[in-house]
Image 1 (cartoon, rainbow, N blue to C red):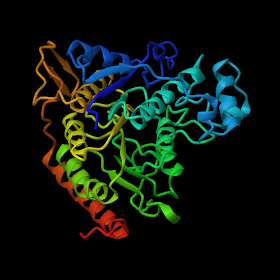
Image 2: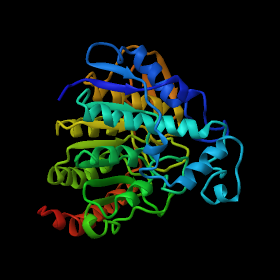
Image 3: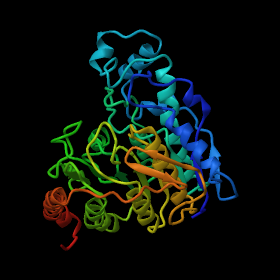
Image 4: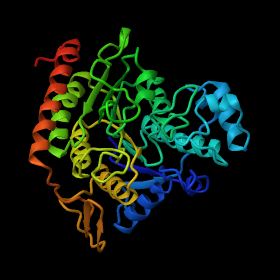
Length: 378
């Protein structure tokens, strides 16, 4: 383990951005970088910034079909036809904007760059806040996602014989990644997300566990509306940790979507960013390389603060409260009181009982269906 942490960023990612009316804000990465620089979290010998390399057409075609890539490139030039529209381009979720192909190639290339840095031994920790496009399929765009950088990064690892554990903490189910590896066991996908009963994309239920060689290697933890920190951490500790121990991956990919946070306008969970700090800390104890990406997060300030906190843990500079004197301001459901951590949220006791019961049911279902495949005693 080299111990060095690498932050992937390029100002070019700010030049071609989603339309202003789109909830997905690509400037979050730059704002995160500005925050961590101001707190001294991007200096010193053990952390550095690294420019991403755009994914080549050959690299993109490791997962995406040529006809789709052609449609995406043409749409970015203002040429969207019926075939492109049928592939999900030009919708409210996946709007057309100039330079979109170049943006998607660079954002996904950042995750491939991070994977190659880990493979080469130049780093063990890499964070691409501009990544996390887990909904994109081989021939379609969906959910603000055009190119699936997670799949491409995972394939970069598997091509050199690495076993990958993909841990998705975004509030939405990683349907695109799951589908890509549903019949494979060299990539285990564990996704904790708001239930598809109440949120896009309507998938990710406990019975989706993989097929063929991949049976038992797709693991879904659908969570009820109002899930709070303790319930979420219980699900992670009782489902994900035993599976990680059993699978013993060579490398982790973690999607750090911040749309699980209380106050996010597009989802209904009730977490604080302390959950991310704790889970990242637990994953780091496995002493395996970690490629972390961004993802969702539509309260911009809360998302930036959550990513900055996650980065502080990844590069080993996290303290109990990170009180570095950033000044005070109120941000919706959270407080920035001179640090990065959210205050503790109080939730309705009656609702907590409902959440606890639903989470326990989900845990028991996974234990009964997935754990026996891996020889895990319950």
